[in-house]
Amino acid sequence: MTTRSVLIYVDRKDRAFAEFFRVLRPRGRISVGEPINRFSFPEPRGRFLGYDVMRVVEIADKLEAFFDREERPKISAMMNFDERDLITIAERTGFGNIHLDLLADIKSPRAEDWSRFIKSAGNPLSPTLEEAMKASLTTAERDRFAAHLRPLVESGSGAQRRAFAYLSAEKPAS
Image (cartoon, rainbow, N blue to C red):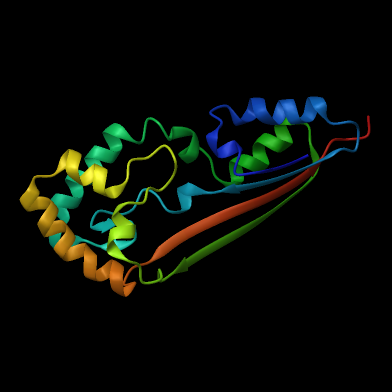
């Protein structure tokens, strides 16, 4: 059984593993690939989507508060685990021969078109940056924030943090 970026949408990952275990025949294997969002979030104050926003930190704080209020409750399943949790859940479920590879990167983002950047969202359940800015900032704040962030985005002057875990495990023979 193979899944990729499925458990990230499941609140009760332990139940999903129990179901994997139940339907597998003895010596059946699972292969799970999941992004590890805890590697990236929460960002320290003064960082926003990997960019240094300390000069406009009070505006970034308002945007973060909007995301905390509007987005975080919808995406709690995406943030409530890391690679250690995947191993622990697999082991507690009864799987053996567990192996996990973690691929983690911290790198400069590629330069990006500003209009594309503000119209994108981190995941299908999240508002776009443009929507968040319109919902939480005044026009003057939006203009000031964009004036600061846009050159950083367009030059790729930030730091992206991403991690992905690959777990394999086997249901015992008996």
